[in-house]
Image (cartoon, rainbow, N blue to C red):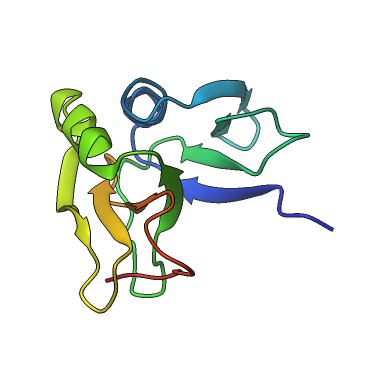
Length: 136
């Protein structure tokens, strides 16, 4: 068994695809409209679906906003340099909600950004600590 994808409902599919591809450097892997169901699916990721888990962006036609709720946490992405990636996100028009730096109770360098719908994305700097999973 393996994880295939994580699905996020998005209000503006084009804006979300732009953020994940242009700002975060992912690739649009496939996209399909489902007119009978009035929704579109777009799959994005850093590698192909047979090699890596990806993100499924779901756009329900006519819905431009969702309540995120309190159960959702974040998507984590390993990066070589969290400071540099945060600067690139800001330069690309993205929103950094927690600047890069060591987590409060450890030495792992992390940062948080938000996608256009407010979903949190954590950057974890490679090689900065032993084991870390979760927020700051």
